[in-house]
Amino acid sequence: MDEVFELGSKIREDFPILKRLVRGKPFVYLDSAATTQKPIQVIEAIKNYYEMFNANVHRGIYSIAEEATVAYEKAREKVAHFINARSPREIVFTRNATEAINLVMYSWGLSNVRRRDVLLTTEMEHHSNLLPWQTLSKLKGATLKFIGFNEDGFLKLEEFDKYKNKSVKLFAFTFASNVLGTINQVRELVKYAKKMGAVTIVDAAQAVPHMPVDVQQLDCDFMVFSGHKMLGPMGIGVLYGKERLLEEMKPFMVGGEMVKAVSFESSEWNDIPWKFEAGTPNVEGAIGLAAAIDYLQRLGMDTVRKHEVKLTEHALDALTRVDGITYYGPSSPEQRCGLISFNLKGIHPHDLAMFLDNEGIAIRAGHHCAMLLHNRLGITASARVSFYIYNIPSEIDLLVNNLEKIKKMLEI
Ligand code: 7TS
Image (cartoon, rainbow, N blue to C red; front, side, top):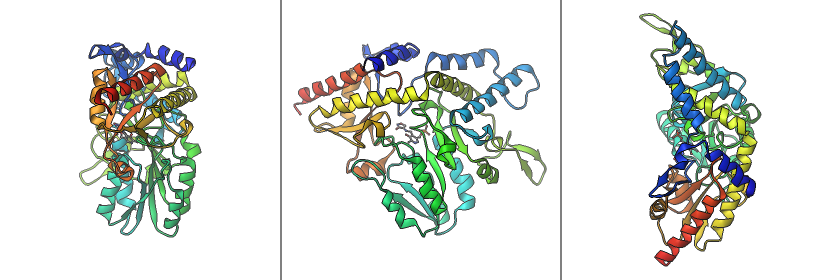
């Protein structure tokens, strides 16, 4: 655990917010699955943009407009490289993962899904990767079906057999569950989907920030993630799509920036990816995200992953020693991302989160935008702790000490 402490402690120096006190206590942030904190390098990159070359992109003839455009497009190249896309043309900037999924739903879905087609997803999805498909199935008279998960939090692969001879148009699934922590075997799942002739969309909101991800190796058709969950600012997200699919798709929104030529009757769309980026984009967000990727790449994504596996191992070990704790998802830290959802017998997760807040500890409580999943677990809510590169083992120890304190106080 010494090296985990050393790395986390060194990284913490870059995060101003982690130096503040909350309720007079040192701030312990265990909610990075909701959003991560930002290092000074990201904050400075955004500040520098506004102080030095703030201008609208793709239109200015003057110098700083050119600088802004170059920075915005360089950010796209950086994202493409980070997930090993074939070309920056395959990277569309959106507001967040949710908007990226909605883009695919409206743009690809409305044109390609027909009555009685099957849309397949899983019971472990965040609402962002569920409601768009529910909506699409209603709009098109298609059927939405679900792959379930077993007691250990793994998808029931045998359930794919049911859809062998059906017209499955789409398989939308999460890379890593934001509640169970399960890391799905994306490459295998894409293979299953391809056999059925389905297009694949991978929700990588809890994966791209935490481990090496290579879209060419995974061979998925679409992948989405959010900048704010990977040290970047809010309001910038990514849709990766195979060039061939993006070329075929109609724009999601229309207006400025996304056209080449406009006549009174019709318009000629811009090339990909700009065809999908109507209006002034989030330049500040793209620049901040590029700085976040630089930060993660300096550390190395293997190091990021290793750090989180060690923290998860420590946390699973410590939490399971607390009498009355039930945690959800796989028991092996190697098969999980860096988060653990749990319940402590005798106390509602919301009350637990409030008690912990009094001690300066931030955790998430509720259904984590995954009501279906909680329903399947037979619960309405859970408490969740989630880690990132700046967390250290002593923060987990403090959490567990406080759980014991709460138990004593409430005599549970
Ligand atoms: N998909 C997964 C797996 C997520 O965990 C989240 C956000 C999203 C999609 C949506 O991301 P957004 O940036 O578009 O909002 N998850 C959480 C969470 O677990 N707690 O707060 C937000």
